[in-house]
Amino acid sequence: MKKILSVVLAMTVLVLTIAAQPPKSMGSSDPEAKKILDAVSAKFKTFKSVQSKFSLKIENSSNKVMGNKSGTVFMKGTKYRINVTGQEIYCDGSNVWTVDKAAKEVTISKLDPSNNTITPQKLFTNFYDKDFLYKLNSDAKGIQEIELTPIDKSKLFHKVIVYINKATKTITSTKVFEKAGNRYTYTVSGMNTTGNITDATFVFDQKNYPGMEIVDLR
Image: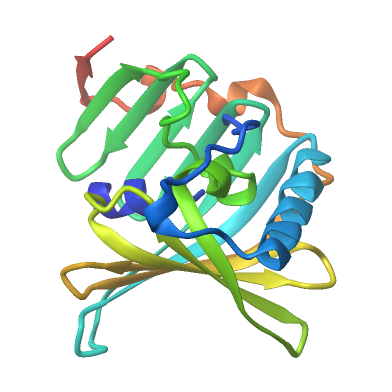
């Protein structure tokens, strides 16, 4: 599940501001899809903070549901916090604490400031310019469907579908298709962009997790 969260949230607080040109053999992206994704990114950047509920559904190649998880994500600037079944992740903009409740273990690592950093904010910003080719599949009933194909073919997934609310210019769900056949659907609901989230929300407090083993990898 840690790997799955990483894969999904990688779509999902670093903003890529320079669009890398994909290899000529890879073709080019759809200009209309880029307009839509750019609008989503611009809208998200206007939010000072975000709190949202989300769900994660895991299916195999036979459409059998293998698992469901739900949680809450908080975002503010480069800070984020994820509360999901059995796991919590804190990031204060410099350090990342990953709490594994079943293992009673907390892993601490430094936040990598490179463009490859995995953060929830990437789900809502223009990560797509450097890492994907993209096209608009459909635009109907207020939902726009955009298909993204990774330029790096060594990725574990071969396709990502992003669903966007046309009126609000926000992503409602993302579906990741693994090469092995599994599919992961990350759905956002109840997004609050007007609340006041304190900086303390993003800092791990060991007093709240007695008996946990601390593994410091910094």
